[in-house]
Image (cartoon, rainbow, N blue to C red; front, side):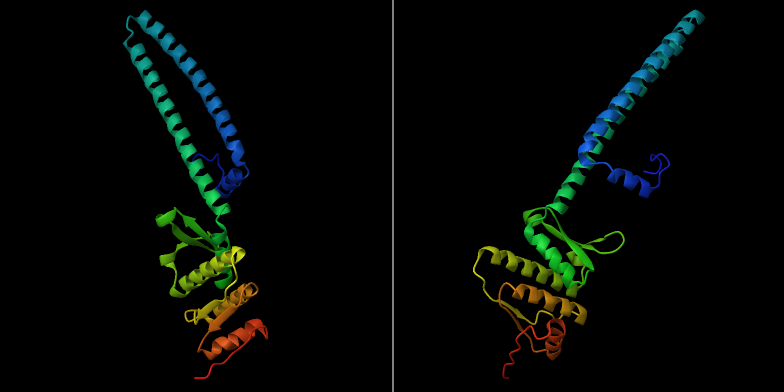
Length: 246
């Protein structure tokens, strides 16, 4: 990229790419291809004239073998240039298609994935900012995008046990919310699902459960006293505590 970037660095090249709208790319490619074709035609005409001139010179000198060799070389160069131009065009189209598909996946995610992304970001305290899906059906692969420089993609198998638990909770909460959009509200029951959460993320999870509780009754069973204290820290008096006899 740097070799063919007209002296620009990577940041300048990225800025130049981002300044071009997708719907302009085809027009720019056509203009570039037309300019390249015109340049090739000019070069070919000049080469042909040069071959003719050398041929005449060789004829005057009594030999045309050099002219024939030069003509063959010029023809081979032209064929190589055509092949390279075809490859560049096809490869560019392939890259553009891949980019467009990925952009569509990122911007047009299903409602479940969008809402789960919001929950997952909240549950991980902003460490993971987005969920992404590749493939379809049984071949569907789920990733998260980590916050920070580079926005690293993290597969499920690359997450800790606690982070995976937070991912599954985010998906479950999002699925319940979508279910509530078109169905009768039923209680959401959870049984000590914060065992792999540290206190910071447990507080975030309690707040997420409180968000769901605005739409349906949410019941959380626990035998850990500190979870009750975390709930008080997160919600104040906005929850009902019922202690069961042993």
